[in-house]
Length: 609
Ligand SMILES: Nc1ncnc2c1ncn2[C@@H]1O[C@H](COP(=O)(O)OP(=O)(O)OP(=O)(O)O)[C@@H](O)[C@H]1O
Ligand SMILES: [Mg+2]
Image 1 (cartoon, helix red, strand yellow):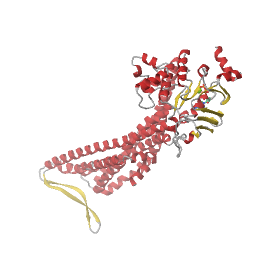
Image 2 (cartoon, protein in one colour; image 1 turned 180 degrees about the horizontal axis):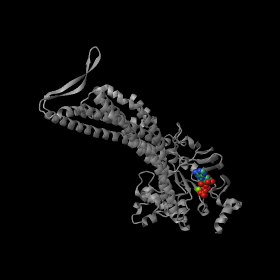
Image 3 (cartoon, helix red, strand yellow; image 1 turned 60 degrees about the vertical axis):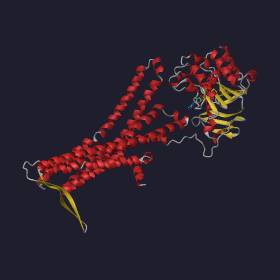
Image 4 (spheres, protein in one colour; image 1 turned 180 degrees about the vertical axis):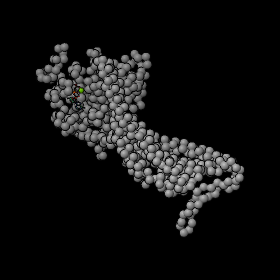
């Protein structure tokens, strides 16, 4: 469709896709906008009779004529005058002109209002859809995407850039129809009045075109810089809020404030650069009109013998014809700003998650036999191996543990099971099927994870435990909490399960957060339970409770557990000792103790203290 083609051309294919869905609303806005442009030409037709006839003090009748074109056959156009009213007294003409002026302004205001309302609905709907898609993109992108980026920078794109887009889209689209139309109407009027003089006036057009292009280029460049600097400031804010405790603890408030000031100053500098060009275009173009206004009076009076009324009307029409030109220049500038913001948002939108369902991916049935690692290698960055040739086999219902010094690759190994990352080579199989061949939803649906840092939502304890989205009853939630040894401390809060835990769970202690996270994992009723340091941050007493919680589960679920506390894992069916990403020993606690190797060293170190 031609309409869509126009969008592609003006906005670029990315955003045109979002605009297209709401083109009916846009049409309403544009048609009303065009109507309002027609109403503004009315005063030009009123001014000339007002000055030349309506102002006459004598009372003999006058007539109201307007310039007109006579079309005749065979094709020819002749300029004539059309008499609208004849034999009317000047005072009556004055009243009539006043009434018409009032009505035309009223109709114009009404059409402008509804045009802008439809435009606002159009742009806000388009951006709402884009906003939702962007959030879905954030959710679907793999963790590796976020390793390289600051979250504040991403937030800035989702807020500041989208706001810029929302502000400009409808103005630009409506303006692109309304302004040329206004221009056309007034240029038509001017041509009718005196086409020679009008053509003379428009010799300044090339100057305007050059200026518009120059300013447009500069504004685009600087607007991208402004958005980048805005993102830096947002990141800074975010880091200050997230790391406030560290900043206060190290008395680095002044230093951080200095860093922030640097970012804020930089933003100010970039914004001012942008403003220099963005604000400059209007006045620069205004100055070109000074060439024109005296020209109309001097040339119009001396060479063309126009009456005062005609000159005033032509000046009005010129000012009105010039406004859209100025407006179009501003639209061009806005379009460049919009393109800058669009590029930043669609950089993210275009990222294709590298971990996603294959087209032929099947749903994976619930685990029945075993989870196998076959010669798994993994690296975060090419050339920096984190896991190498890891192979093992875990039968359903078994509990296996991973131990090893810090940085050995234990958390990384566990992250491979729900496909937070994909193996670099080798494979992970569940019941013989490569996990890359099944849908992510069916894979992750049977895995529950308690990670090294227990993250909670700013919500009630009950909702945090019931995060799975299932319709669990309070009784089921409580049962999970009882098994996770969380019930007693929850009941000690005045609001019990309705207690709100604060941002990321900050109103709870580390150990309490961890037990809520365990309850959350248990309520999901997973086939596979992954526990990364479930007992870290716990005192020996709570550790004992967590250990009991885990023992409650023995035999029911397949459990992968990482722990530095070797007491927690004595009951494991097998323990794997990891060093520099490779398995160096494996066996039960007793077997490994008897072996007198790395495990026994770790064990002895722990219990000497
Ligand atoms: N996102 C990442 N990008 C690059 N390297 C990473 C990333 N995450 C971890 N690493 C590196 O991978 C190695 C293994 O990290 P991992 O978190 O798996 O260790 P771990 O055995 O769980 O240690 P800990 O006992 O301290 O939790 C480390 O050398 C670490 O620096
Ligand atoms: Mg770890």
